[in-house]
Amino acid sequence: MTATHGEPSDGEGMAGRLVLVIDATVPAAVHQASATLAARLADEAGLPVTVATAPVDRLDALRDSLGRDADVRRREYAPTPRADASQPMSSAPFLWRRDGRPDWGSMWTTFCELALYGGPPQRGPESPLRAPTNPADSGREMLAEMQRGIWETTGLYAESIEPGWLAVTCESPTMAAWMCAAIILENVDARVEEERLVLPAGPDYQLKDEVKSIITVVAKTHHYWQAHVTGAAEHR
Image 1 (tube, rainbow, N blue to C red):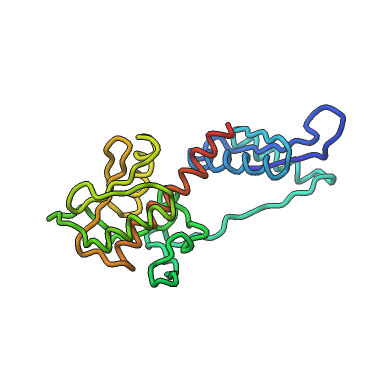
Image 2: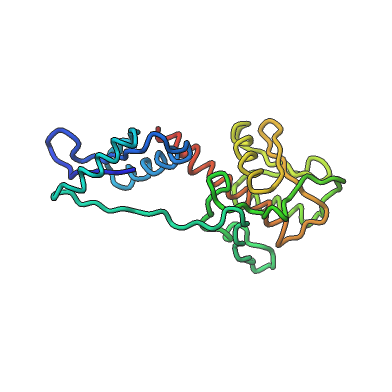
């Protein structure tokens, strides 16, 4: 992957333009990430950004050519080492309001990569949140915290629809399906009923364990849906 740029001028050509060239064989997730990057770069730089794909041999030739050109300045960026994707993500510190209740809206300022994109899952394989085998009503207090946490972090309405299950109303069936697929990869069971995302809400859920995990996966997948899926689509 490479990028070139030029200073704005009154002439023609590529002056005042950024070009992002991508190996045509990289995974779809990389193409999506490149589109997101290009959209943000265009906004921040105030310049148009062209995204192109090319065979890797042409990229190698371009890289070699740039390396031999004395007028070209080039910098390589290596990816930040990632945590073992098989291990669960580290937990964000718990923040509390003055009334002693969790401050869900302030608990996260950033989110780690989704398991969908190679990041660590929310729950480890040894402690997944599965569909309740003997559904029972969740404790009223814990259910209320899940509803409040989802609302404070996403603005989405959640309600108990049957014993052991919580339904989150999404903006569309497509949004619900995308979030459902992403959440399942976080080792949390989920299903879809039209525009509703349905999540487990077991009777023995604890605030700092299962309740926090449910709120986290909804907040994280909602963030990626808004910023990286619908956001990237709007810039196409």
